[in-house]
Length: 359
Image (spheres, rainbow, N blue to C red):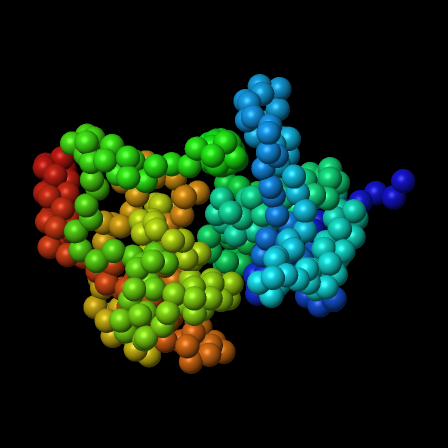
């Protein structure tokens, strides 16, 4: 039997694949994938395989199966095939790309899941895995930022904290199962009663209010882009994802706008690149030290996302629309990391305490 030595990286789209391939040395461009340095990098063009909950089969937790196996047990998997009445038909391109993925998969001793760093990205890969049913060692490359050192480390080693990732994924899958089971049973959530229940318990809710400007998430970026640039949601969404795929911004998560400590540490190094921005470079130069007000404070998990930050790369070859949205993000990043009065007061108190200890 021929020993398999290929490592195949599967990601969501060609833009991401190109950036990842460049980082790991897969420089030969072939039909449907990149190849080189022992790697193949291919893409799915989104959720190429769809899942459907098995009707009539009640969701039951089974201690003998892990959550991925339970997912396969409770769902059917098939190629996406949109309703022809709405103008969609199964794409020949999908069939061709799936054939490429299957061929590379069969030659691989490791497949790297480099889908988007979201729960939806996890589902897209699981759908593909259980549709193909070709057992292989899987490594998860969690890539909220597409920088070369981060890509190489993730592709070679997988997630930084696999136990935490597995615990997060298991919890998300349970919630997904319960929702699918409820919908299949016709027990959709009563929105009105849920709102009333939330209102009754509002006294127990503790709010984490961040003073000063916050980082963008996808929703606030869209609102800003509408006001400043006249963009609707769809073009804002597509441009933001292109900027992410080019390695210029972190993944544009929908709601989260805080950042974990390791991202803050990176921004301390990368922030100086913004001083060369033609629109807001002078503004960046005036920031002496970076505020920590946007860092995670309540035990948030990075697997649920973080605010949009720049990555320290110089933008090149951007379209006019990409440049305008990128500069809008740059402006907000500078504002979010600019210390306010509370930051200065905290720093002064910390300095006084250190002097007392030294005395």
